[in-house]
Length: 415
Image 1 (tube, rainbow, N blue to C red):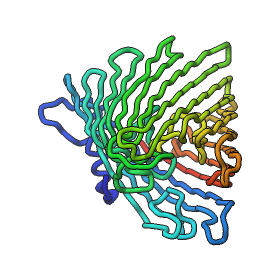
Image 2 (image 1 turned 120 degrees about the horizontal axis):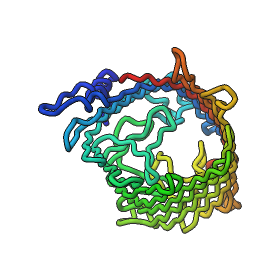
Image 3 (image 1 turned 30 degrees about the vertical axis):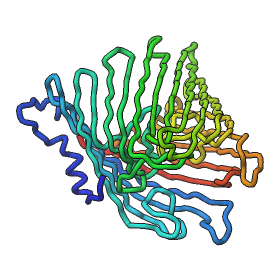
Image 4 (image 1 turned 135 degrees about the vertical axis):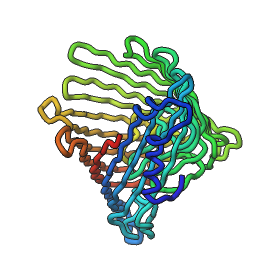
């Protein structure tokens, strides 16, 4: 990962579509290639309600992102080779020293930072049968580690991983991550974790899931180790059951985490239970969630990733020591009412049982409203608009917050 002009990043990203490997057939390598350019315009305003005159009162910034992703196919033969590439450019449209720190840009309160930042990376991949290995820049989307993409540019790891689907219904994954490029940064750094201290240059993971019962039931078993900080086991069960016009579902996850090696993050002893139940009919889906944090610590997870827990929301994650939280959520898809591409949800989560500021009995809640529309056809096909509104009230250190995010995105297929 390095700072680079966009032109150089584009050249890297399109390498997979033009490279010729001597002696190897090119039909699949080029014919299966794909590339997209996403234009992401992001406005974010967070009102920090519990501040004094000497502190920052709000975070408000506006930025334009360009996200280029390219994936080649594989060369023909028993062993196939390919290339993936990513390049990102972020442009500051509006910020100030007093309003910086939304994590859209590489800055913080008191310094609005540079006018632009850019990054690029690539990965070499190898395929044998139904097993694929990759080395280089990675954006894993797995229950044990899921790269975050909730700001202007995505989070990218450097490392290697293998995915195997040799047996029907069974998917296995394993690998090692060595560095991370955070969402508002251009350089690679050691890996850190939320709720614990320390840094590590090795995150090892392995596991997989097995689908059966006609694909309606999935069981998963995962292991992750942030070397010398913590290790974690995840047990997962997902079941979907159609009943008449209804579709019922459940996602149960249990995490067991302990300190590891030299204990650079201190003593860690945590377990977390996550339960997500849903019922859908037509355009409507109703959800209930429950999350319980046990043990002697808050729940650890890799910084800026999306942990596989039900109450990880727009602002809060409800992972404090001893915290119990409940969620109610309603989703609607307006395609059933003649407006394809329009969807929305509202959710409310309340948590308690932890220690609040000054030793008070901890209580907090978050309410989210999320509305999205993606144009389905015509010259502006794939243009999307999303409004995300959140309200937080908490007697923990985060305090009270009101937040709005407006995201306009347009994805252009290049190959």
